[in-house]
Length: 222
Image: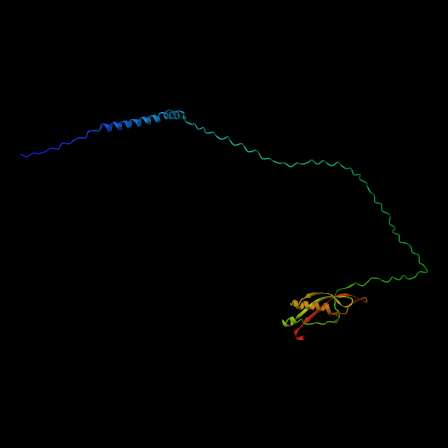
């Protein structure tokens, strides 16, 4: 016959001293917490009691005022006084016409009468001959411009020359050019500087006169 042994489980018993110490510590902490919160409880309650809901009232803005009417500026017109009527006396003027004696005077013949001789005319001749006349040359030297000769320029310049009582040119106008301004200028300057003419004569007196003078520049003649 076999034999068996049984194990017996032992339960641990609580430590009463330890349990008592823990309980005492919890009780002290709880009492301290209650004591600390005790003065704040009435104040918190007062705050919640004094808090009241806030009512928000919406105020509508006042209506906008109407704009003022436009100001119309009228010009100030100063009254003009009416002029006082002026009475102008009207005087009638009578034109008296003297009678015209239509009877021709009676001239009695005289035995000592002499023929009446008309006085000599003192009318001076004109200072400038009318129109354009033809004048005779006294001296007409002409030099061909060197630059025009090198450029083979040639042609005829028609000048209108005012000649004084001594036959000297005092004014020269280019009436028709040669096509080359260099020739036109040279012809005018040479005629005005050195040419001489026979002065125009009217009633035996030398007068100024305009004359047409052609000046020809030709290469074959040089």
